[in-house]
Image (cartoon, rainbow, N blue to C red; front, side, top):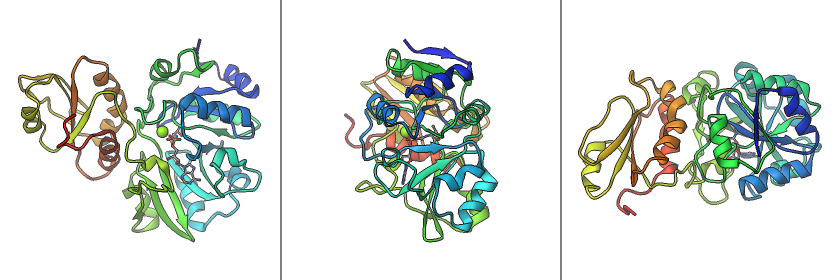
Length: 324
Ligand code: TXA
Ligand code: MG
């Protein structure tokens, strides 16, 4: 049975024995293991049922450890790390030979970040090794933002969940890679494009490739509830098309009413997109647990955190004309 605890030393002990622990980060909960332990990393893939071609993110305690992980650090990567770490920015860089291929799915690059959650940081500082940690959810499902979400997914499958409360940012880290010295965005996330572009200038987005994805976080089906989810600019209108169904609505700021809308959850009454991002996955978990037949989500404004929210909702959604 998974034990939920706030005891960081207990978590360190479990990790020292080639085992996995769910850890809080500022973005989502991660399923963590020692990067140098093939046993631990295999457990992560098996528990998540994650395909082996999909590499993991390496979590380190400080930017000072970056040269141990990355063999080449473009000047802009160094600058971004110094400005945004600890924080929700993942850098994909050429890896050091010491970083095992089982963490990078055999690639010669490695994804690395310093998480901003105090519990994760304190754990990383105690350990003699970095932690590989994908989001702590089965492949393609909604990411967890509370210890309870992790328990609901992995009860009986993992020995320990380190509880750090609800994740503050609520959406995964933004992933930036490099072509030569030029930064490229692989995954939208909790650090906004606007924040990064203030440092780098205009960025190229490379996050819609389905085949041979450089960052499979951009797989088109991902972050999905069990119920069908549809994304639209006009919730009330789409609800009319589903007159024979019970509908649950995920709205930005205003409750939408119609006779077959049985649940409506608002992400931020003031329309604050950062707050909406923080509430997104928890609200998706809640609506998915109701007896509604379908979920209709309202599209967010396409700026700041709204872009990352729309990205997740698009990947969670079905095309509107199929209906089933
Ligand atoms: O916020 C986050 O990033 C969370 C927390 C736990 O840190 N982690 C997370 O991990 O979202 P995961 O495994 O769900 O997503 C990792 C993404 C995947 O899309 C993976 O393909 C990409 O990072 N990735 C990892 N290594 C890569 C590499 N060498 N090149 C390109 N993409 C990589
Ligand atoms: Mg994930």
